[in-house]
Length: 248
Image (cartoon, rainbow, N blue to C red; front, side, top):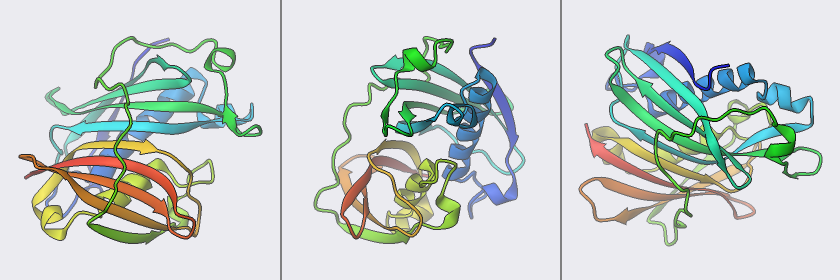
């Protein structure tokens, strides 16, 4: 069985922004879709695991985009399990265009979760036949992201039914979308995120009101923000993000 998996996509009009460039969320969805297909081929998709009262929970995500493709372009995503880090299973990604030039690279960290016990399950005991390729598309040891203290601004979102995934909580892509909607309009219209780092800390559910806090991270040639996502009524910290933006 191959350790890597490749899936190809064509960028459609509904997957681009007002500039005709692929939406960041569309790129994230390409990666997520390819990962899901590969996990199914290896026998440990969410559907496979739920039969054993297990599931995957995403812990960390780091995406670096070199270029956002346009309508009609082909995107080929290669993904592979890239090892373990303690209780975490790692999965990496590389997306290329029709000329085999890199569009994006990413790495992610996942917890195998026991649904009944509500705690991490052993990778060794539950995935004895897992395969991994000892190669990272993007080197990251997943050190802690800084908390978004003293935010400059905050935006509210309410969790809708389309935000809910197969685990019956908010899909990881929705967290990223809320953060990417938070910068000032001037940045949103003139820049695009080329670096997205996420640390997921708690679950959100249908009907929750989300508070997306943001502040400038540092002085830099690129615009860099720290983000904090919170469940508004309880104040629960849901995720921390760092995003870096550059002019188009």
